[in-house]
Image (cartoon, rainbow, N blue to C red; front, side):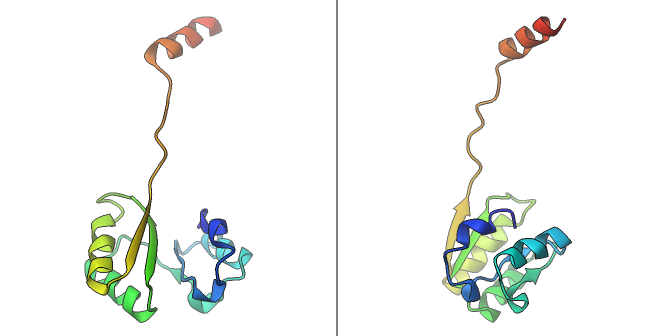
Length: 112
């Protein structure tokens, strides 16, 4: 839901966001004027079969998803896309640069 604004320039009637069934998820869709009939508000992860049914039911040709790994049901989504002929776009997290152990220890010393 938090990435939905990136799709605001597309034909909203053709977007079928699958969001968590929360007020925040629904509000994110409403903020872009996505019709309620297009909102798929469900808590996953889902089986391969359910992913296939959703792709087929809504004639989804492009699936945009984050790489949530096994916990997020990523493989089931990918296999469903392959089965249905939908294209898969995967959003990956940017690499974290994080701090080194030395920089953290130095900051701690400064605070003492």
